[in-house]
Amino acid sequence: MKILVVNAGSSSLKFQLLDMENEQVIAKGNCDRIGIDGHVSAKTGDGREYNADCSFPTHTEAFEKLVEVITTGETKVIDSMAEISAVGHRIVQGADIFDKSCLVTDEIIDQIDALAELAPVHNHPHALALRACKKVIPADCPQVVVFDTAFHQTMPSKAFMFGLPYDCYEKYHVRKYGFHGTSHRFVSMELAKVMGKKPEDLKIVSCHLGNGSSITAVDGGKSVDTSMGFTPLDGVVMGTRSGSVDPSAVTYVAKKLGLSPDEMSDYLNKKSGLLGVSGVGSDNREVQAAADAGNERAKLVSDMLCYEIKKYIGSYAAAMNGMDAVLFTGGIGENSWEVRKGVCENMEFFGIKIDNEINEASSTRGKLTKISAPDSKVEVWVVPTNEELLIARDTLALVTAK
Ligand code: ADP
Image (cartoon, rainbow, N blue to C red; front, side, top):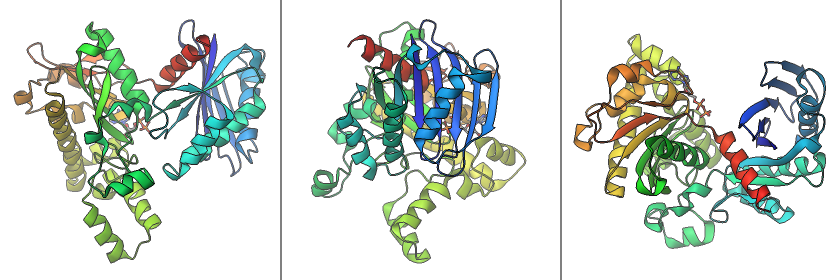
């Protein structure tokens, strides 16, 4: 069975076609610059590539191009879309309406669109892609939606509520939702497998560290708390996002700089974080290189990142009354031995001790590696994430259960 996985943004449509017999990627690519001009790039599992400028006024033309590149020309991998069993879509915000993946209906597309107020950058483009997909793929090909927030719907109310007037929750649905749920679910299940344990028997702190970063407490296979909040701005310092800041500092700065709410949101989401503090850039590699070369502000923000992650690990060990394993994933988590070292050193009190040699040698993305020392009470692992694969697995499970 072949499953097409789609991750749609406001101007892009990333895709992967997977063969579920062996869970291998047959082709992947991106239809980019939708609504601007248009560009497509695609690569097949056997190394064939295609790049071209196109015209993508809307997601529909981008979807038509996606179909064209996988069924014809240089990157042809299937004869027709009839070979595809289903399409799985990544959806950022499912709020408290969706606690698991589900088959798409028109009503569900409308519900996803209606949640755009909570996720303005993401949900409306997701709905556009769902409608475009429906127009372009065969009528009998089912679509499935997989939500970044769904895994965190198991959080207890004491973890997801903010100390704001209750009305704010009831009227405006302001609460912690958490994100990266597909990744946290995937890596925590992979870790249980490799540890030879059932997910129900493990307490894991999962650190997904990339351009956006979040830490999740996974107790018995369920998310019980997570660092991102109402939006993906909360938690630890990120590439261009501030992470948690005293809300009074936000209102103070907005007043000082005369910023509107939208401008203040840009300030926190796009001008802060590694970029804002270091002044060097948002990419961890650039910041690390600058810190190594003696740049004080780059060193400062690197130290802040490690310190904040460390505090989440400690607080989640307290929340779960224990911790069997800590895992690192995402671009920074899988590659940066420096960040993992900075997080894990001086954590003996929590039973964490890493093997520095193994940790330093583990700096290539995609390798599952145990980096804790043999006498570490808590196991520490690098676990490669694969959100597309989990979306494909969920999609397959739903369409075969039909
Ligand atoms: P996203 O969150 O957008 O999915 P990724 O998970 O790919 O992004 O993570 C991107 C981050 O990973 C960037 O900050 C980048 O600098 C960092 N990164 C990638 N490779 C390395 C590396 N070899 N060493 C340190 N950091 C790295």
